[in-house]
Image (tube, rainbow, N blue to C red; front, top):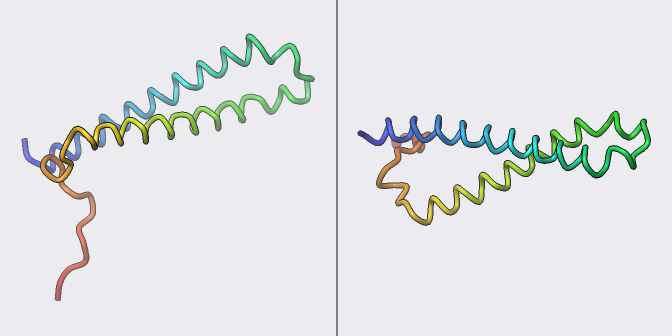
Length: 92
């Protein structure tokens, strides 16, 4: 496989993993919310819980994705296997 194909496959795989992490974080936060907080919150606060949980799941997935990406970059030489997404400015 060449570098461009590796880059495209990595982007698709990384996007899929990021979506899986987001869904898993959202499910985990919803389970924790329903077990511990739903009975103690007033009804007006419960209306805001789903958007806050969704934003929290995105934040958790962002942090987890960055951690996994840093771990991968320590193990793999990025320049050897992947092509840059954007090339530099053209030389005149």
